[in-house]
Length: 253
Image (tube, rainbow, N blue to C red; front, side, top):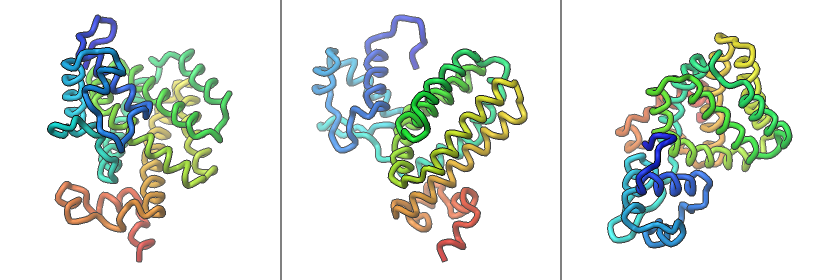
């Protein structure tokens, strides 16, 4: 995507603006996204808007609909499992590479902004999570890892918003508090330059998140008890769920 610090072509400017509208949830999943509406809202021509929508389509965030514009792709449990399977591998690596390189002042600022709001605010927790993980990935100075993260960023943010809504609906204060305490523990390990502990907490944090997500989705009946035939064809197997929740099968019997 666009290179920071350089004047961006119009299509990349449009891409960044539309992406920000998506990740800040100013674009509804229930309404078509049209070139005309975006052109009026952003004050840009339709050509860069069209090119931006094509880029977002390649990112897997929107689906282009002939003669109608585009729509946000729905968040499915296949999306969530796939993204968190990737993050189980990438997050510990990014954390390992960030140790000793991360800007401690920025880290402390992220922590302070969160603590000022408290852990009972789901929006604050979501913002805290996003800022922390983004800083960790950018701090490793690994351009390839950062590129992979950025290519997933929009999809992750759309999914993460759905996840935080899921956690908020569950109204499980203990779960929310635990997640934010895990974030704070990652910060402590990074401050102390404790590579082993930072990596371990990061890995456990993502694994537990996937377990929490699937349990809550099953409880809300937004997740089928077992993957459908179509899901299996896409590579989501019963083993994927069993790996995420070891006790899943016994709970569904």
